[in-house]
Length: 189
Image 1 (spheres, one colour):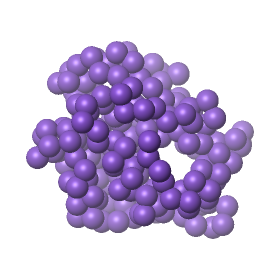
Image 2 (cartoon, one colour):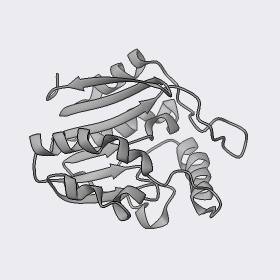
Image 3 (cartoon, helix red, strand yellow):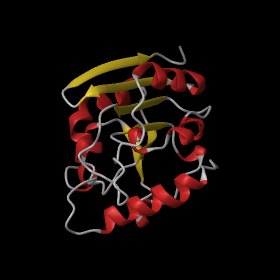
Image 4 (tube, helix red, strand yellow):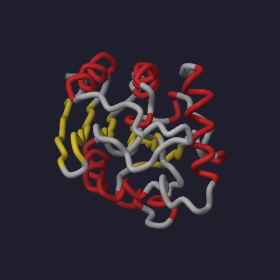
């Protein structure tokens, strides 16, 4: 099981649990997933019948209200988010073979990224689909820090991914909130 830094365990987990517990906040509900349903569908058809982990699913609105997984060739979707008690149990590696993560990586401190990628990229993985925003979020944490705590450039992110990659990976890198760049690593290249 992945061990993340004390910073991640204390500050970020508590912060996101607070944000998710507020009933007046319509953020982090998991609606951004709708922007990538077809990208994920293509991957699921290329690598069918996996159990998929939605890493950082938020309140899982796209799953519960829109049933997006009906469009994918997956056996099951496991929901995981540190801020939602019912989704906070991190699955073991043998429980999933594909992973999606939308609007998550930029919220993870730089020092914890290698541990996250070690968790994602295990030997049985078929594919990973993720987005990375490299611009400040509208939201701030309770101490005033921007919610996007990791705003590294594309080269930094690609170097981190290449260190850990074990499967087909598609990344949508967003240098601004209006520009998207698709990066594909086929198999482990």
